[in-house]
Every structure is written in structure tokens, then in C-alpha cells.
Image (tube, rainbow, N blue to C red):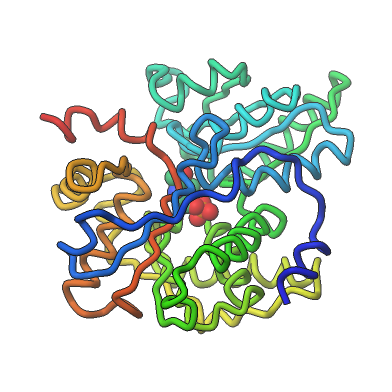
Length: 336
Ligand SMILES: Cc1ncc(COP(=O)(O)O)c(C=O)c1O
């Protein structure tokens, strides 16, 4: 089903280096009691843009088809998505405005890690308070109107690039994964564990496993903020929107979407001793860089559920969605 379906999807611009490798965990997986494969989407390129590179291939193609000359998006101050968008814009010769959420825009944070890279790539960085960020769609529309008044042609990308179009990046990724799986895994069951931050990756995975007829795959989102119910709804909504726009895509029932909310810790961007420890262990035992905000929480979820025998299957593909720059703001905690 998926191959004619892939041809029917909208065009993409080449931003990601694909296929990304599927690699066994040398040690950590066995220690956690799982057979672990990393899907190395941290290696999509675009200056380490991880999962965002796949989404941006579709989003930037749409922007260009509409004649846009500047991308507008938003996220937290260390947003991987904003940084990825800034580099995608630079790569394509487009402008970029990023709205970054910070407690006090009058006292902006130091330009470090992703917040530095946004500027390095030439993005127009604007800080907004948490209260303003709650109305981010309106704030981005205001920025777009301001740009239009100056003769520019803006294209607004939602938080995380997580809309129906962006999610198609992970529909394509599931076809790629199907072709890479060891023969013994194809019939399943196996878990596909991923970090859920704004839901687009999860939506693409849910649609993609159905489209690729990966019947044995059990997607498992590990929430990095909010709770499981929130993500089930967000993911199902994006899947429904994708099907409305491209009716050949399979349907996804919210009740079938599995997300675990028990590994968020104190909140988004906040961590725990266990969360830091799993990042250290992945680095030391597997030579793989995770980050405390996204992939570290996904791995923590795999470890925690494995220990309770609660994984859909102990054969696990962990989507390494990138985010390595997100380790730097935690330097003192990671290596005290
Ligand atoms: C490194 C990394 N992994 C995972 C995610 C989560 O993906 P999504 O926002 O599509 O849920 C994000 C962004 O939110 C991210 O930056």
C-alpha cells in the first residue's frame, strides 16, 4: 500500500540525509532487558536537526510552492524545532523569524546551545513571555501581518512543525524502517518508542505503520510534557487532519494510540536524577548522545516499562529523534 501512497504525497525539498541507519544498541539495551535498535534520526543532517528535518522537507516545499520568502515559527528558548527551521531557511535562502518562549523577555537568556544556533543561522529571534506564548498562533499571525506590510511573503509553521503536512515526514520514515528491519522482526511484535513533544512525530508514526502494513509494530509515545490523554488527542487530531487532506491515508482511532505519561518528571525541560543517569549511561555504554529533554525521557520510559514488564514487546526500536544540543544547558547537572 505504501509505495503508491508515497507517490501521492505532496512534494518535498531535500533537507534530510535518508535513509538514516538502524543500529543495534551495543550494551545498554541488554542491560535494560530489551533487544534494542536505534533508528538514528539524529543523523538526518541539516546541522543535527533530528526528526525536524523530515517534517521540514514537506513544510518548506509547501512554503516555497506558495512563494514564501520567510518562515515564521515558535518554541521554547531551547527549541530544536526553531533551530532546525532557522537552518532549513538558511539552506533554502529564505528568511526566518522565531518566537522563543522565556520567563522574562526583557531579560532574555544567554545565547547558548540552540538559542545561539538560531542567531548563527541568521534568524530574527524574538522573545515572548509564557503568557504571550499561550496565544502563539495569534502572535505568529501578527508577525506574519507585520512582515506582509513590509512586502515579505511569510509562511507560518506551527510549534514543532506538528501539523498534518509535517507529520508526513514520519509516514515516509515508517516505509524506510520497514525496509530496514531484520527479517525476524518484520512480523512483529515490536515496540517503536518515541518522545512525544508536540505530537507530529507520533501522528506520522501511527499513520505510517498502518500505511506500511507494519502489523507487528506497536508505537509507544513517551510524553516529555503534558500527559498521555493530551497526546492521544493531539496525535489523533493530526492523523484525522492528514486523512482529510490525503484520503488515501489510513485512519487512526485515538483509542489505539498508546502514550505513556509517567516519565515526564517535574515538567517540560525539567529533569530527574534517573533522567540524567540514563543520558550518561547511553553515552558511556552505547556511545550514543541523548538529551535530557526528549530522547533521554524516551529511553527512561523504555527502561521503566521494561523493568515492569509493561512494554508492548521487549523488541524495541527507539526513535533517536536528535536534540543533542539540548544536552548543553544541562552541563552542570550531567557532569557535576
Ligand atoms: C529531539 C526531539 N525529539 C522529539 C521531539 C518530539 O517530536 P514531536 O514534537 O513531533 O512530538 C522533539 C520536538 O518536539 C525534539 O526536538
